[in-house]
Length: 359
Image (cartoon, rainbow, N blue to C red; front, side):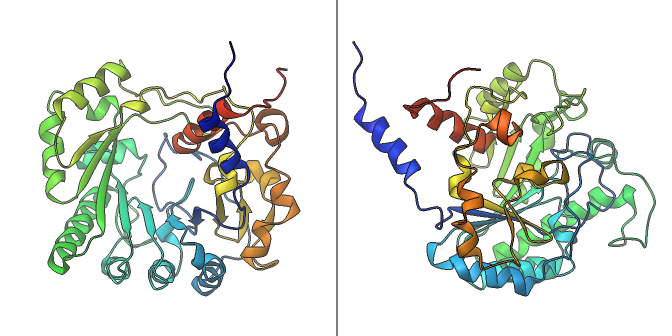
């Protein structure tokens, strides 16, 4: 006998009726490039952002003023660029922190020097900084991230073979300063697992990172946006993550993301529900429904530009609202969710009383 599920009905209606002008998350992609990084596992591997005049920190600040009253989480990241390659990187961080908004910063850490560290530590609101490290030594770091040697004096000035040492030094200095100030900012180190870094000494290799971070996260890389899967993923993903989860159970600083064992995208949902709660802004002010599509191949999903009207107005525009009921495959043509968005879409799809007809 079918039974009406009042809780599911309430949660689904809450999602459907949520005010699109009150984003829970705004993701900024201010970066111009990735220095000498050419990571084979990069989500946006080989895909570039749309060209255009780069937003200034002042323009970003004005956009944040439009929605500050709703206290969205501001994520500063990049699907195909390093966010701190913006010419005013520290000022972009200050634009968030000075407004008392919550901040999540994802960075390789190469450019995270004193100025950026100061900008982060100036604020009091909730904040985390995630450094994507993925390796435990110079050679493996260079190989996993496709970094060509040389190039000293260009870009931010560091030779490719010295990237690892500089990144670790930046993290160590940031952690020490955070501790000195008694800041609540959380420092995280993310480690994607590959054959090159999954040797028998993995547990010992992780230990030093717990001394310069508040959290070390271990996961398996998801497939790229172009459908490509790198060939150096570790074997037996589920078993490996299960073993590590058991080994580090109860550890105050190590988390194993066992839900990342499957690299492939889920195909069980037909609508994108997550876009109702978030917006992504690229370096030139183009607005997208999610961070994964903020690249040139998905220009058809950019619904506006920040310079055209106030952000609060654009969030309620017919162009944005029109995307909410589109089919992910036939209309949006973008089944490339990251794991967070995929989990939300999958959960809300199960509650949808009027799913798309199969076809």
